[in-house]
Length: 452
Image 1 (cartoon, rainbow, N blue to C red):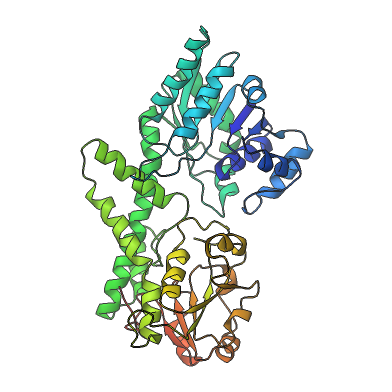
Image 2: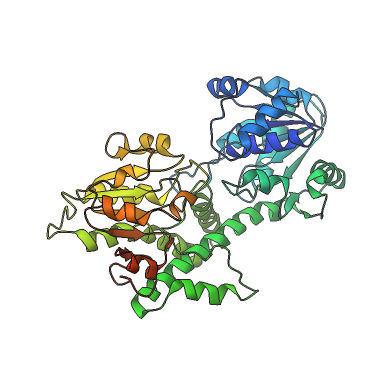
């Protein structure tokens, strides 16, 4: 099939590369000339495992191309994917200006029947607005060309996006047109070789499905973070609680790890957007408001623990003269994405408290410099930042941090203190190593050192 993907960002690039990998002819289009020039020369603007290899291979084999020419993209392809950003506005609602702009562009240049697919995460009712934008352009051209709208939300996890796309848990297709549904089934058939996981529903339900899924996962994270805070106060071990709860097949283990809060490009934005959507319908979504509040508070917990463990009597800057080493900056491992990352809140709190901050991350140092500039120190060596630091705090659970050299850590730090926001280490092992260990919600080894 001939496909155009509008938006060469995270979702657009993954979709374009994976559709090309399954044999389709794909044009990825973006208005950013510098980005497109870079992609033509093999420069990938994001880090996602396997994506660069996929793009380079399909470019070389002629199935994937990049352009800023919107006319070419519209005219040459039957299926037009909209994969542009929907950033949150000041009120939390999704900003649809880029989605609607693509719709108008397609309406302005379409030369035959087109299937227009919303791949961007958009509120319920967006397809109706895109349809109206396209039709307005056609009417201005006195054109009777036909088109159809589809909602096809993405369910990609950063760090595992290629596998998620090539071997999806499910593919949701929102359409009321039987012919279009069959074309979309044919498009996704190569990804359904083992078992069909394609679900066809009405457009508004498809739009809601994406928000509901992310809101549910965010809720699980905030719930477990609250359980961890209670475990600290009650002398329970959140790791044992997770095992006991997760063993219930109705619940399962996924998204039940306590941590410093969720971040990234999806959960924070989508929770806010769903709350805003509810408000527009005069519906008070109390649960999601609480989820958001818990997450905001959770991002403060590691800094609170460090201040309690190391802080002075100076109420305004209790960490003056202290150096804190931070492992992990991206909001999760296997990505360089720092949007809404807990590290942003944590490090800002540490700086405000007077601390000197050093940071390491396998992929996100270049992104961190955009946020912090020269206010913190950076190193590509995870051990280098430990020299004469007062504490190590683990923010992101990269594999590199899961089994470190504790003797080396202990020797480098001024005092052997680890504040672990991901519960990567065993409290008994830390005790044996002579390390003062402050995890989240775990019995023993300093669980009362901080709290939420």
